[in-house]
Image 1: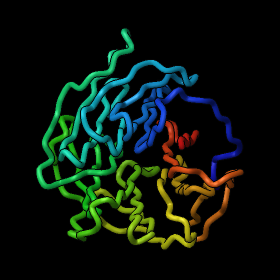
Image 2 (image 1 turned 90 degrees about the vertical axis):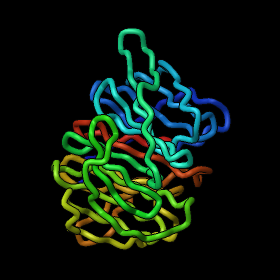
Image 3 (image 1 turned 30 degrees about the vertical axis):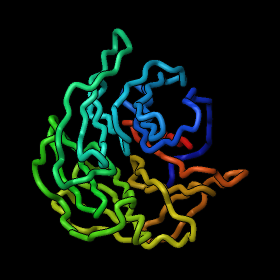
Length: 250
């Protein structure tokens, strides 16, 4: 059963013409947004107050909280992964390490167990260690697609599973960390789903410009909210570490 019962909102102060690519929340409730337009990662406290901005000198496609103090950011157009260090005492955020990803152009990141999963344009998924080095390849689809396709991944209820949104195929699937396919759904909505996340009950949520919905294990969709007006940009979602709150930003 979906855990979402109500929706609260507050305004985040973002720069003009912001295009949000990624969103993550640390265990202490701070919100981090990667902005394609300004090429910055912006930090807000749990009340939505602007805390800091960090220039990443490239277009960020996703941000992932590895811990309260370390964030992963992917810059696929530069074939790089950045590690950002957060200084909680001074509210500063700075790049501590830049790692080349070679031919891999990662577009989505998620924290699992003691590592980070990274998904590229072709829906290949790798496991990374705390220094952004590849430990193993989880999925090797070698499915060449349009380089502008941005697939999305998120961790599941259990430490050994994750979910993947394949935007080009319009499917949502669940996999073990050994690559085994557990669940496979085709998305029924005509509008392209732009992001996914999973709660503590392993219920998967999707969103597009018109609605937020949950996906049943049988493949059906339950619409939770419809927006009063169709959004101009594709929204992004994430859950907190307790997996009992969902954050949406558009």
